[in-house]
Image (cartoon, rainbow, N blue to C red; front, side):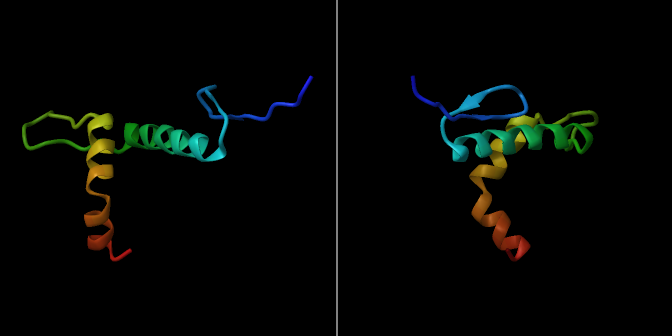
Length: 70
C-alpha cells in the first residue's frame, strides 16, 4: 500500500499537482466574483458570459498588464 497525495478544489475536483489545482481554483474564484460584477455589452441587457470574459482576459493578458502598469 502506498500513500497518495492530491489537491482538492472547492468544487470537489481532485488534482495530482498543486499547480493544476491552483489554476482551476483561480477560474472558480473568477466565476464566483463575476456573478456580482457582470460586464454588459453595448446592447441594452446584453451580458458578456463569464467564460467568454475569462477567455478574453487570458488572450489579452499581456496587453492588460501593460495598460495597468503591472
